[in-house]
Image 1 (cartoon, rainbow over the protein chains, first blue to last red):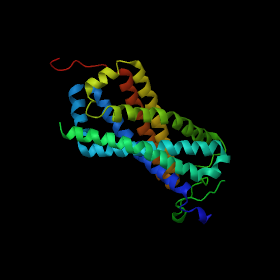
Image 2: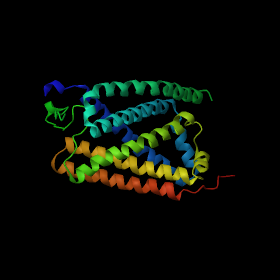
Image 3: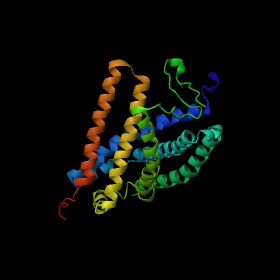
Image 4: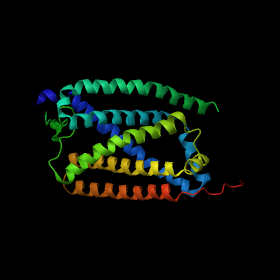
Length: 122
Length: 144
């Protein structure tokens, strides 16, 4: 069993937990900030203005990365759980998750960085 | 296929994982139902949450989102239903995920109270979020 320690499956599992925890933390905050719409435009707009700071823009890119990884690896988890025969290919499936992750994440990160810069210039 | 080697086996934490890194399917009862719920809700959230992120954070951005944006968006029942469904699935999925982590790492009374606390927070957030999605009505803008 010690062969599996640090194997791809366990690293995927650890990353899945960490990204899930990160997304959950943001979700809790996001439900609270969105609820402020019930108190009208002034309060809501003032709180949203805080999120326009570049540091939150960087956090937003991190949030996207966490959701994207969790989603892609989640699809892999469902695939091996319901098609156990496929688990011989679980390493290749994880490689596919990583490749797809970067194919989607890189252009999105470029666009989101553009949003941060747009905010800094006006 | 069920190589049950926990990642933290050196630290006394034993988690039953398949070699692919998913949790071993529970034999039955609530644990099996929740295990299935995590997979079903997860597949729906792939579309709901990624769709939400693309719409709000890629095609739009925090610079175009304000109170007026919410007013226009929530004029359509579709977006209220979308947000309501996502709220419930994401909170139940996320809080059950946290419950599984608590079960893995905490023991005894601490575990019991941690699980109660997270269910309490989950119920409050479900109520608050549902209230927003259902009851939001545009307030008259000052001076408008």
